[in-house]
Image (cartoon, rainbow, N blue to C red):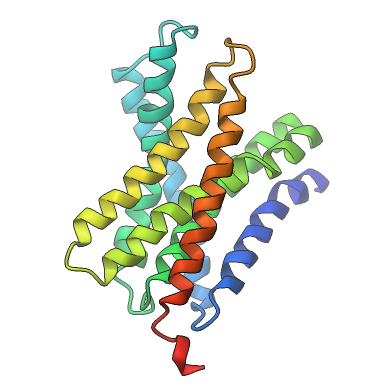
Length: 226
């Protein structure tokens, strides 16, 4: 039970942070919960199917090959996972009438991302113990949050733009790039010290995420109603 709490605490912390950053018109609890659960179960299911397909099409035959680990990080893992989240935001959250300002893109994308991260984190923590829980609380979990913010920033803009497809794709691409970079530097652990690149990409992602949140807050359609 304690391990489970260690696994879900960083998830809850990030969700609350994003929720309270929605200063002017908060989203319905039920819709947020559904987004989270879709991320936790449906998104994970989609990823497992994509892993089976990409794993067969792009097998890793040499774990010490930088090129193969690049393909694995960006296309097999990052694209599969971010696409699974994108599908839910695109077809469940974005069309909803409650998605009524750009910041909502960040809210729903992070909720879906945290749902996915919750399932993943519980699995890793129950297997790896407290050290894994602490490490992932400051690395993998906030990384998933930044991917969600970056994707959601553009999907929030897309809802109210004539260039919806282009902005949606930009969000998916940016999330995939940051996710792929983060994983790539961890996958090539046979190069000493290269894992530092993962932390650098995470820090850059956090900085950009903070700017994205601030920008959508300033442009809230409900700002002057308060």
